[in-house]
Image (cartoon, rainbow, N blue to C red; front, side):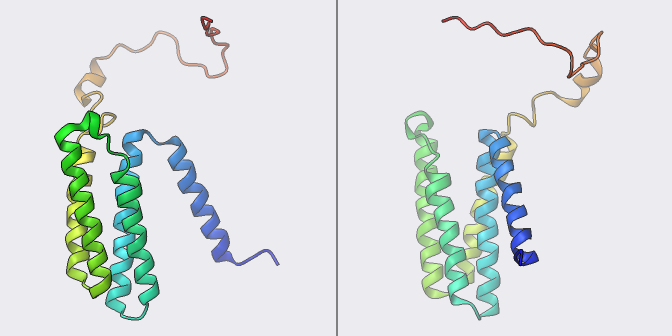
Length: 163
């Protein structure tokens, strides 16, 4: 009558993901793309090792390729990023090609190779997170405490915008 519990859980998960995307910083969005590609590759590996779902394996690999090409690769700004962006573009192109070969030849070692590359890039990306290193922990104790507590219900000063 109202659908299965599984479809309800899937809808709930989708809302959680969409909410996370809306609230995420640009830096966090890239991390989410890495996570999505890695999850798709883990799913593909599971299907390949089970040996029973060629369609599901292909869909998982296709999803990873789409995330790499339409997400990670498309987010590169080659004008600003210079040589680093060019190198990343070539690496993403390499990964997509390797995943096509993995799908054609049912080769788990290729998927594991791409997983390693994505994990290394994700680790490097997380290491340069501007939000993570904003304030060293020792400065938190040295910061003066505000004299008046924050009141979210107190009226705020209006913002003036010049026309």
